Structure formats: structure tokens, C-alpha cells
Length: 186
Image (cartoon, rainbow, N blue to C red; front, side):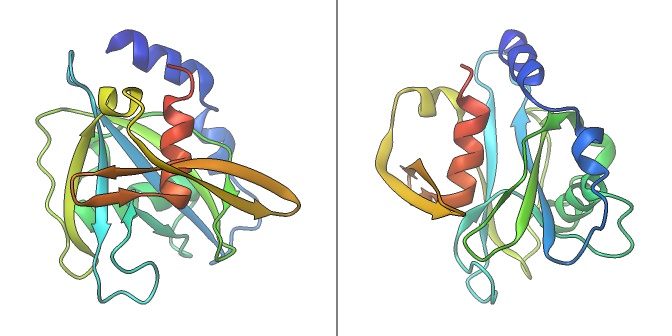
């Protein structure tokens, strides 16, 4: 576990480098990809968005959301949204770094931050935003449990991103791309 976290942290950008984005707007968002610190079986934590939401209903996602004026930077956005959605206090997250921002198909520029949490952490989904919270062991992804490869094109660049089916959940799109980025060095 410690070697994975160290290799991941070495590949990530410093969180403060991407947190202080000039000209923040409501068209920017941040998510928090949380990894548990279990010594032999670390897990990646996902949420299932509530079906009644207007944006991305019923989709698998990382906790996060759009920047709001009270947020001093995008890291604050990710931590605030994580606290609101899963009741995880920011002090319980050890920030490992950030992944280069990219845009969703809807055109929102999203900065993913990566954090480490205790494997014993208790989280509670906010029923106004989420159906549930679930965890996927990192080694499950390394077993190449790919459902299919999706192609997405934006600004003349085509990306091939795996989609995964874990139990009753489908992990695809932006969330799968962030997952792939986290796992790419392992």
C-alpha cells in the first residue's frame, strides 16, 4: 500500500498548483477521488448520484461539484462537496495531489484531487444528492475487469477510456478516466 501511495503521489501534481486557478467560475468544478489506507487491500470510494438530480442522475461519480463563490479555491470546493455529500470532514482527508483538469461532455472543467482516508472511515450519503456510497478494491481494476472501451472526442482529441461494471454499478466517462489516471502508474 505505501509503495502504491508513494508512486501515485510522485505522479500527481501538487494540489496547491491546481487549486489556485485564476478566474474561477461556476463552469468549473472539483472532485475528490478517495483511496482507503488499508495496508493489503486499498479501495477507491465512489458514489451513486441520486436518480432525481437534474445533472448526471443515477451515475457513478466521485464526491464533488461546482465551484461556489465562498470557496477560496478548487481544493476547497472538492473538500466542501465531499463533506456535504458523504459527511467526511476535510481534516480526515490526506491530500496526495491533483490530476490535470479536463472537461466533461457537458463542458464543465473539472479538477480531480486525490486523497487518502482511513479504511475505517465512516461516510453517510446525503439522500438529497446520493443513492449510496460504495468501495472497489484497487486490485479489482488491475485484474482488467473492463466492460468495454468508450471513445470520447473533445477539442479535436479522441480518448479511449475503459468502462467498468462492478456489481450493479457502471463506472464510465469522466469517473472512469480519473480512475484510469490513478491506476496508470501501477
